[in-house]
Amino acid sequence: MADSLLKTANLQAWYGESHALHGIDIEVREGEVVTLLGRNGAGKTSTLRAIMGLIGRRTGSVRFEGKELINARSDIIARAGIALCPEERGIFASLDVTENLMLPPVVRPGGMSIAEIHTLFPNLKERARSPGTKLSGGEQQMLAIARILRTGARLLMLDEPTEGLAPVIVQQIGHTIREIKQRGFTVLLVEQNFRFAQTVADRHYVIDHGQVVDHLDNAEMANSAERLHQYLGV
Image (cartoon, rainbow, N blue to C red; front, side):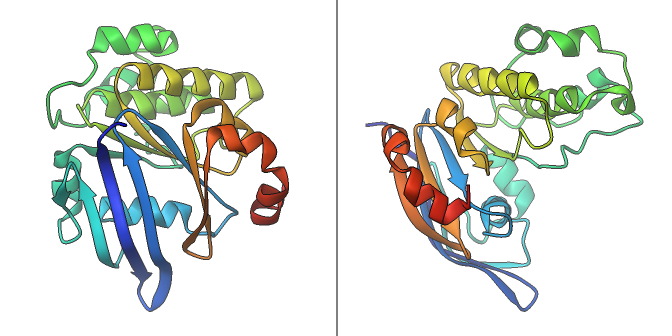
C-alpha cells in the first residue's frame, strides 16, 4: 500500500462565525485519485480551501508528507507541494495561453515541461498566443490544470473540473486525470457527478453538512447506488 501523502484529522473550519467543517478525516495516498462527493454546500470546496489555508479559521490537523501544516500560511502550503485548481479556473483574460501557463513559480522539481504539457494538451499549443478571453470553457480548464502541472506540485486539488462542460470535453478531462496519475501525480478531486468520478478515482469520500458520512472504494460504487442517491439526490 502506498504511503500517505495527505492526511487530515478532525479538520474544522469557519467563515467568520459560520462553522463550515465539523471534523473532516480523509487520507490520500501517493499516486491515488480520490474524490470528495456531495451536494452543493456540503463542504467539499471548503475542505479544499481549508487544506490550502484559504479559509478564515481552521483547527485540527493537516499533514502533508508527514509535515503538519495546520498553522502554515497558504503560500507555505503551496511551496510544500499542494496546488489548488479552483472551480472558477482563475485564467487571466489579459494574458495569452503561454503567459498564463508560465505565471506560477516552480515550487519543486518534478513538474512537467512545456513540451510535455503541449503533448498532453495539444489545444494549448495551437492556442499559445490566444488571450484567455478567447478560450472555450474546456480550454480554460485544461490551461488551469496545465498551469499547476508545471509547478512541481505533488498533490493536485481539482474543484469541479467538469462543471458546465460538454460531454466530449468531460471525457477529455477524464483522460487527462488518468494520464497525470500514470505520470505519478496525486489528485484530490471535488465532484458532484459520481458517474464521472467512477471513471477516474480509486476511492471516494462522501461529505454532507461539513462531515465525512461515507467512504467507498471505486469497486463498491456500482453496488452503492441507493446509498449515493440518499447522499447526493441523484
